[in-house]
Length: 511
Image (cartoon, rainbow, N blue to C red):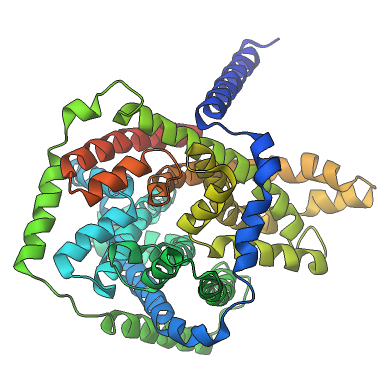
């Protein structure tokens, strides 16, 4: 056997063994139990049943905060995406930008991506007061960090020959960028911005916990009073909003990728509509209420985070940061694995290119329903099944992963070349065989990248599960935030930063 082939097989075996070791350790640490799930799983559906029939009379009260949530999401996404394209340009390795600038931007982006959006929103409420302005700024910062990273990766993967020709002929660098590389990366960049917009609508639904406006505050109140019919009303209206956004996103992605023919009149109409929507969203956001005391508290918060409690950071016990962060990684890892398996099955059944529409449409509705519910609502549901702890966190992360991964997987499935699939179908090869030999080899790289990205996101998602007691680092993080122990919060965030940086490096090498 060729030595290179042997080495490749040995590496694959080592990776598989490491993966299985992680799964086994994670199962033990998180206490995942099929017996508990089988015995008490019905409680999850009991919780859902209590939400119906919904309280239609309450719907009138939901419109205003729901509109605030949508405006916050649109304004935050637009501002973050607009700023992100410039910082993506400055952080690209392909454009011969000063290395110091590149690394500074990358470090800042990585730090911000480490911080849960809930903490960013909390800092913003101290600076700008309680309300939608703080929520908009938090979402803009979060969007900027995500799209700066994505944008720089798109630029680094784009040929720069035409750009270098213009620069060498005396054209200003930024001008050359917008005339060459920008034209090639903007469809992919905007497509990812649409994904972030949908994510921001759901992110905005939890920002009310820290007073950052939107429907989250109303949802938090009704959860506190256990008004299940009203919770059902809120989630139903949020579902309708996400369906509309989903439909617009699909149309825009098809338009950007050329599946819908470009027309000059349609370009003008779309430009006017989206410019008007962005303007209305930005200028109608509640004005900030900046106070000297609020700014002082915010600076003290930042100062505390930058001066972490080192004794707590390196405490070697089950209540120390290192163990709790590892526990969070186990929760996020198992949640990602379980979610990816379920998402793959749903994606195959929900793809218009693989199954009839009468089957695909109901599956897609189920997927959108799953994506509608905020993470902490799932946490409360699963705590009724497993009780507080890591197992509830695993189930919560699993279901949250299904929503995003199903969508990503379906896009990959719908976009792949079906010539081999159709040929095998004509030869009588079954559905499973076609998936294994035709579909999987073409989409596995894309699916792997999506899973790794979701794992990255899930570590931050797991850090807010402390809101409902669903295990991991989230519980102490929320406790220290409530008690203004910013040095302890800083210890947690620094360890999270290092962990996410390592995962980022592993993910980059894998891709």
